[in-house]
Length: 149
Image (cartoon, rainbow, N blue to C red; front, side, top):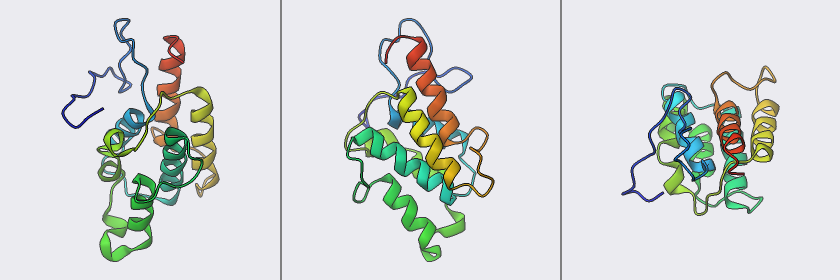
């Protein structure tokens, strides 16, 4: 999605589900929806790990993207002087689809990997309700039910 393209219209879950939509939801788009849902939530370690996992899946690198979304989120978390507790998930993910050097449709496998990363780094060992992992899972379900992945 380029910066001049408009986002797709969204339903109650935050994703398009119309039959006319033949393009699958990408990881970047799902991250943006998560950012919208979590606009006012302070950034946490589990959020950073979920973002890192999603970014790695989107780019296909299997490693951190230098100066990528996850690296930026980690820098905010590690350096209170540049944001720390004041940085919200929505601020980090607001333009995820155009910040990713490569993006791909969300698959159930992507959702599983992101969920594992979020849970492993959560103090409660649970995915947060309406959080990044849940949003990625919903996007994968939409893609799968539409036969797009």
